[in-house]
Image (cartoon, rainbow, N blue to C red; front, side, top):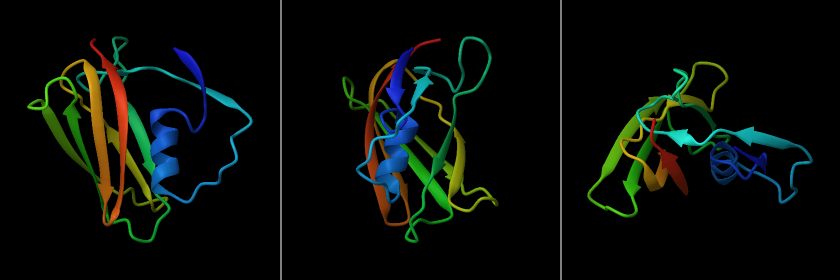
Length: 122
């Protein structure tokens, strides 16, 4: 586990890229667990990520497409509906199939972002 500023982790980076964020760094830090394969952690909890998009061009669904950088033929695709409340939130359990370095594209309506994440096995 690493301590990262709130906007340095997967969730924070995606939120910052998909919504209007300021150039000011947050004053607090947040600890993030590494993303694991298969939609779950070794302790049995799931890889829940709450994506939040505050952009009027977002749609009612968030599409996540991943491509393993060391093996471009390995991909995954998931679609998550927007929560009924609050609007703009997309709860997800991201299910990455294999460990490694993944480029993950996020798209909702005309709003898009790309993040690169390291995923470990269970």
